[in-house]
Image (cartoon, rainbow, N blue to C red; front, top):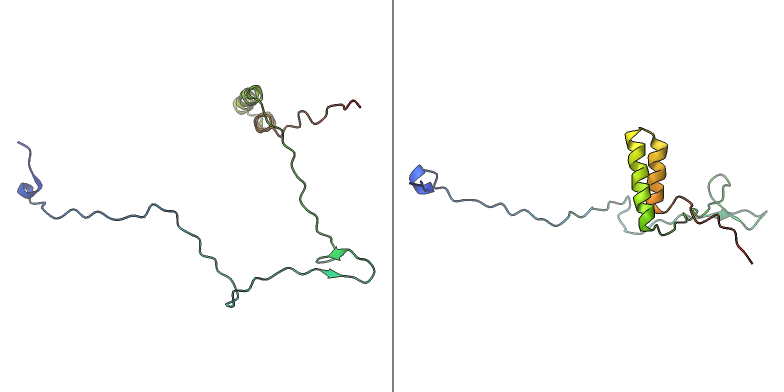
Length: 115
């Protein structure tokens, strides 16, 4: 005969904790209490019209990383090459397989153009 909670003496009410499943938001803390944003200012010299920051070093936009769209065959070949590199403990081969899978291996960027 199955025993119930009341017969075993464990008749306390079950307490279900309410745990929130939503992600926590990060609290932003700033050094100022006014809430104004600080902007980076650049200064120009009288000798030229180029904007300079710091010790005279001009800022440059980051280079764009060109990427082609990998085909299914590239993904399969890249996965095989990555596996071979992992098994043979050759990190360069493994990295080449990863690049091939992602389409950042440079394939297709060296084609000769015919005009």
